[in-house]
Image 1 (cartoon, rainbow, N blue to C red):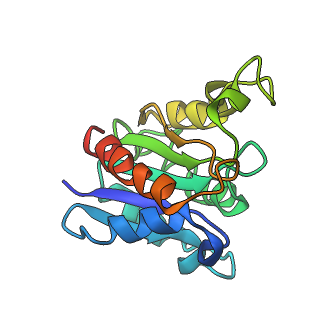
Image 2: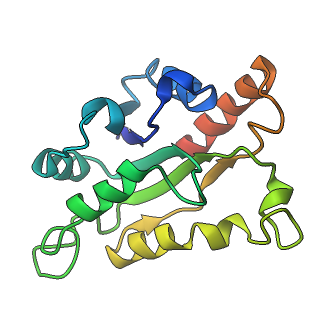
Length: 177
């Protein structure tokens, strides 16, 4: 079964890593459906019914985004608020449309892994910072998997080698989902 990859990057044209990941995924349309939220909804007006039908059609879903202010870009939060509705995503006998669907995050960060540790720059681990996502997907009874995090894109001034090194790691992560 194909994997749905929901990409959330407000300035994809300026991205290095997320743009490259998207390009690579699009080479394999038989394996991945790539859905770019900022491309689909440049005005921020989400078609809830369309999004719900899309989610219902897949058993494996990845949310791909850069780590912004210790969270996701704002359109993903809006997507959660508008798409994961009572009666569809939770809270009724007909709800829980994400139940048992494998869901994971694929995240790029500007800071290296040490920065996201108790002794690092931010004093919090990535697991702690991603807890709201884990709780959200647990609440809707999805099968939340450990995230793929590619650290240090800004600190390493991403060379083509640094970016290309991420591709097989990301594809391997999705393949094991």
